[in-house]
Length: 216
Image 1 (cartoon, rainbow, N blue to C red):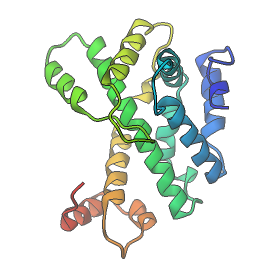
Image 2 (cartoon, helix red, strand yellow):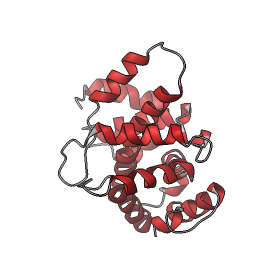
Image 3 (cartoon, rainbow, N blue to C red):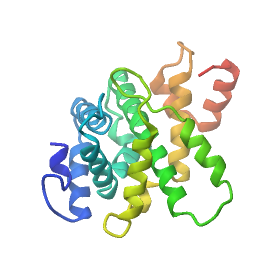
Image 4 (spheres, rainbow, N blue to C red):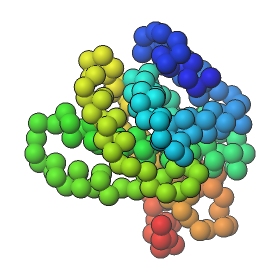
């Protein structure tokens, strides 16, 4: 089903792919949403890259071009998609999204290096990207960073044919929700539920987190 949302199986425009991806991710069933997210992560970050590299690279490119990242950011920032979930399912949904976002932030970082004409912070950004560990769901071993670089190079090479929608890049509200979610997941305060913390004001979460002195 994940592959049918992209042009690997069905031909069509990026708008058509986006509509199929929205139907795939933005659904009422929380358990089905979690299953679809897990499927996405397994397809995009399999345990082994042997003999699969080209297919994985194409999946990443079509996923970005079709607006897959927009769907995940919508789940993150628009609480209506998870408000009916039980706590366990909600945590699992957000954790999978964080795993996927981490991978794509590295890819988009290398992509930015490729399209940028400015040398300001270029070396620092490249150094940071090169030392970020990317893990798989199965064995938690670091995967080759060359995969992320090669995907970024392909994105740059096909920038006109497969452009990345602007909404796929992080905006202020995305960053705020990412920070809030990370604090809530890292908090060791057992008296306040994860669900309650998610609904609190950003500054309140920040203050609580600092008081707990949580180490990630």
